[in-house]
Picture 1 (tube, one colour):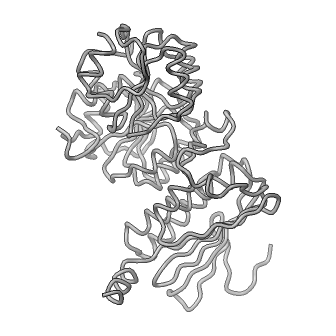
Picture 2: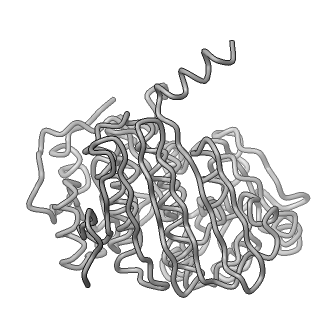
Picture 3: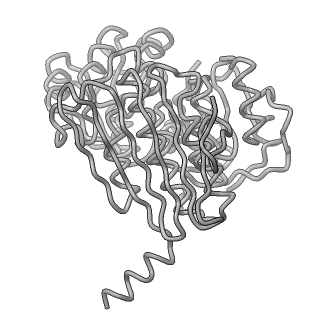
Length: 171
Length: 113
Length: 119
């Protein structure tokens, strides 16, 4: 597969550096029921953030949120994408899938609510904590979905410097 | 050791109502995977889990367990409590995590052998 | 109280699966879990995970949660890929024939706890 200039394929994703060292973007393609690779994209994102020397707490929150969202796509949908962009101030991750959508988002956000079949639960997934965990670990989260039209979930984790600046501005 | 003694010893909250807490505890089992519990626990065991849905009562009834302790401050679903009362399964809760609860039960002499 | 991986290996009569294993690694806390979201909600960087699940996702979850080492209970053996992944992520894997319950009980008896504040 040939890539446009500036893009490189590494690991599971396709990545691009913009403005050298200040912005990084990439995309991972996720396959439904691919449990052998489940979580691999989030692990790679974690490695990328570590290499950029982002602060540990932000890395942890981003990796956890991405992991839960990635698992949701793998467990519940046939396929999806995880697109990330890392700026000096934040990391933003967008998940889009081709699943059959979430009927009741508010219900899905309830801790413990799960539509997972038994075989999924026996693998250690489907405890109904995914979306609540994402909300807990991110600074901004948006989710849109319609039955039959798939789901788009995006979140932002701000880095300490940006959060400190916000606090100062709020004073 | 009886369930009632464990409730007192570990300061557990009893979620079921009018259920006999004088059942004898034969040992302990900790797992969140239902197939694992069904396959490996023993009759009279007390089961430690953070699963709160009503299937846990079915498992406890099937394997004749002496009771269930929900950990991490998890609240059982209303259906779960109702089933626990119907099937006379003592359902208890603690804000402590599984590792701590198991450790304290172990200190009280409850084993898994 | 903390324990080293060497001490934990003895207490649990465990076998080491990964080629990377620093016996002097200090473990300050332990957590028992089978559900991935549960593992993610607890992450202290010097913690040990005791679990019954042996697939690759457990290793990835541990990596995301910054868990130091994993013990597989009840003698369940993970496959080669899982061990290779753990070596790549620098997460030592051990396996014990004790159940999760016995593993937790024995470690607790030797002083390991779930939080730094617990006595």
